[in-house]
Image (cartoon, rainbow, N blue to C red; front, side, top):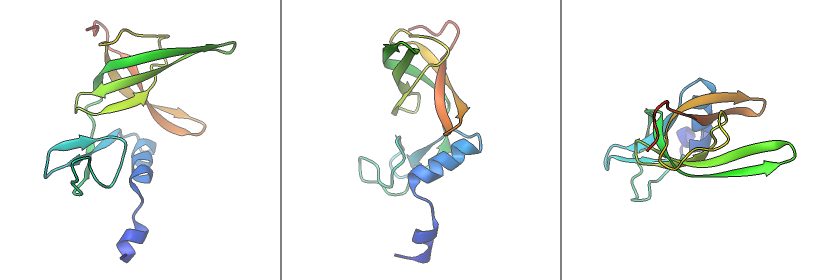
Length: 126
């Protein structure tokens, strides 16, 4: 292990640092063209030459569920980004959305840190 290995942040820390600076970044392996999310050190195909690239920020709702309680309702959505990766998030401006709805990402800042959430795109139904 080199000094650079010790000093460099892990993939999750780097992802969170990008979010904190207002940038939604995902990883891509130039050798294979493969995008990956959640941040990691090796792609599913075994590539290790991962670099950070800005996400387009658009995608499609793959699945969504709504959790209801006395405090209100919240949805949990799986979103297929246009880069071809899937991520779990939420659509905080609506209770639910149809599968296939086009969405756009934004960074929401909470007390415990930033997170990527999605909003439906007007006229973006499948």
